[in-house]
Structure formats: structure tokens, C-alpha cells
View 1 (cartoon, rainbow over the protein chains, first blue to last red):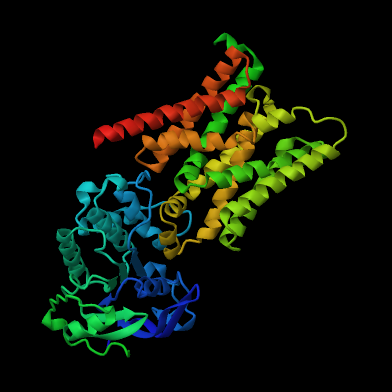
View 2 (tube, chains in turn cyan, blue; view 1 turned 180 degrees about the vertical axis):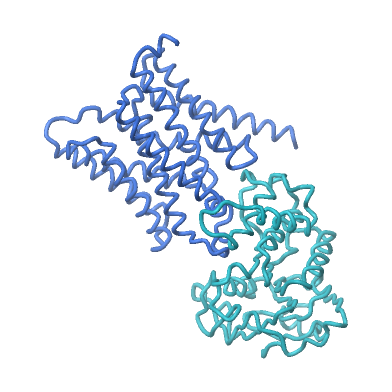
Length: 255
Length: 271
């Protein structure tokens, strides 16, 4: 059994009087590629924010790399859902990606050669080398998303957290992004959350369904349409492409 | 040397224009990209209390402005970020309180308050050499801190939440940036006065943003524009014998209007 990276134990979160997450228990192990599915408003983003230390749990406990959330920024790479930013902000792709190096250096230090090399490698990984000097506001949705993934990768994280990585990109680009994640799962533990059941699952090793609490979790193959429909409250389509060598990772948590 | 520069006050005015434009370009760019113009206006107006304090104590009013503007920066920053007070409420409270303190202190000062008008609306033609030294000193402090924290400030300005996730102490960085704005206000009081500061903190940077690809480029261009606005305003105020600070602002506003219209036209053609 590999080392647990994230452990949520009967986690509850109340935001403005609303129970957003309720008695959620989940363990993510090193090397996992976990997709958390659930409807909008089901608490997926809140779960990520708790793991990042941006939101405090009201009940239960969370540990990340064995300690409280937010204490190991250098080991966690975060790809936010949709960057709320000013499209006219004078900043290039390269400068945005360089921000991924922030946790790796001390305050007031300039970026060094190692930082620039890692940023360049991350840009190369997501296939944006040609656009690295482009102003961020001129990018398409898919290019912006890949920039944000590169920013997370530049920090050489062990754990990658992605919030709706395909929400603002066209269908063709969705495949590109999942192919990219497919390559990244060799080196990173990945947790992504999405409401889009139609595209997830190229190669995820585990799926968890979240609507306030975890409805079910298990290997990707066990994900049934019926369970999802009860979760969403309406019919959904499920497309699964599971790779056999990841099928054995069942019972990671205790829902 | 042009005739106009034979006068010492003109040379001082030019030096003040250039020195203040450096701070204005750097800090104004942060003000514009972070959209904290109204906080900056609040800090500037609160600083009126410091001018009153200077008169009351019989010292250089600029020395009174420094603690008042820093207090406003930290106060507004802490109220909005720690005590969760709505930003416009905190700004309004500080703005009016600072001005009230200033009015009372000036009223308590025996005799009348000479040059009060010039602190409100600026008079670049009356900057003494001693103030130039203070302005230079503040420029160095602002430039050094902005350079040391340039990566952190860029991260906080572009994506505050990501900066927090990266382990940066964003509240502390925010307060530091607000303090730099406070020091910039001190520099600008002599040039355009506390009432008009906000225009030079926003307009040059807003125009520069239209033509810049990086934040550093934006800062340099904003500083150059600020010098141009100052010199053109100074010259026009000399020619027409009108208030210099207000003329600088009107020049800046005209350029802002023209560049905004040009950008809108270019955008429509591009579509």
C-alpha cells in the first residue's frame, strides 16, 4: 500500500450557514489519479479549497502530506477553474508560468536559472513554447488552461489539483488536456474535480462522486450510470475508458 | 538653457516633476492593475490630517503627512482584510476622519495657515530644495522595496489566491503595497496636492497599460507619461497664468480621453 497523500476524515464544511460538505471521508494515495464527479454546487471546489488550506473545515479533519493543509505549498500544484483575471493585464505566458516557482524560492529572491529552466520545461510539456512571449489576454480558452497547468507544473509538485480543467475549452481541446494529464499521471498524484461526466475517465484510476457527501467511490470501472443518475437527479451519460492496469485500485477510501 | 529654466523655482519644479513621476509610474501601475484607486484616494485625503498636524506643531506639513498616510494605509488595509469591513465603508470613514482632524488642528493653530491651498491642490512652483531631498529619499525607498518584492507584488496583483496557495503572506504584502502608496502620496502632495493625487496615480498608468506588454514596461511608460504631463501642465500654467497642479491634471485627463477613444476605435476596426 503506497503512502497516503490526502486524508479527509469525516470532513464537514459550512459556508454562510450552508452545509457544503458533510461527513466526507476520502484517502488519496501516492500515484492515484482520482476524478471527483458531481453536480455544480455539490462542493467539489470547496473540497479542493479545503485541501489547499484556503477554507477551514467545520468538522472532521484533513491532512495533506501528513500535516495541516497549506503547509507544503512546494509539493502541491493547483490549477484553478477559471482564472478571474483582467484580460488586459500586461503579463506574458512565461511570466505567469514563472509564478509556479514562487513556493520554491525565498522571499525577495530573484528568479534564477533553475527557475527559468523549470518554467521552460513546463511550457514545453503543455506544448506552448511557441506562445511563451504572448500576452495572456490573447490566448484561447484551451491555451489559457494549459498555461495554468504549466504554472502548476513549474513548481515540480508531487500532487496536482485541478478544478474543472475542461470547463472553458472546446471539445477538441478537452481531449488534448486529458491526454496531457494522462502523461502527467506517471510522475504526479492527480486529483481533478469536474461536473462533466461525458469526458472524464480516459485513464483515471479512481472515481468519487460528490454531492455534499461522497455518494460512492471506487475504481473507474465500477462507475454505474444508475449511481450517477441518483447523484445528479437526472439522466447522465458516462463515457469510461479505463486502462486495465489501473483497475485494481479499489477501496482507497471508506465512504 | 531655455529662459524659463533661469529661475531656481523652475529648476526645482522640473526636478520635482521628474522625481515624483518615478514613484508615480511604479506605484500607479500597481494601483491600476489591482484596481485600488479608491483606496489610494482614501489614503490621500486622510493625509489632510497630517497637514493640519504639521501646521499645529509648526513643522513641515509633509512630515505630518507621512504618519497619517501610513496610518490610513494600514488602517484601511487591516479593516478590509482582517475585520471584513466593506472596503468603501472603511475608505469613507478614514477619508472623512482624516479631513476632520486636519480642519480642527488648523483651526487650533494660532494665526492663519499660509499655503494651505497649495497642499490641497499642489503648487509645483513652490517646492523648496529641502522638500526635493525628502522626495528623492522617498523615491529611493519606494523603488528599492518595489524592486525587492517585484515577483511577489506581480503574483499578488495577477492572482491573489494563487499567491496565497503558493505560501506567500498576501495580507502582509498587501499592507506593504498600501504603505508604498502612502509614501507616494507624500511625494505627490507638493506637486498636485492631496485632492488631485489620485489622478496622477491612475491616469499615466492607465494610458501606459494600453501600450504595454509587461508590468515593468508599463511602469516605465507611465513614469515617462507622468513627466510629460507635468512639464506640459507646468508650461501651460506658466503661459496662461493658471494653477499648475490643476493644469497638469487637465492635460493628463485630455490625453487619457484621447487614448481611450483611440483604443476604442482601434478595437472596433479590429472586430
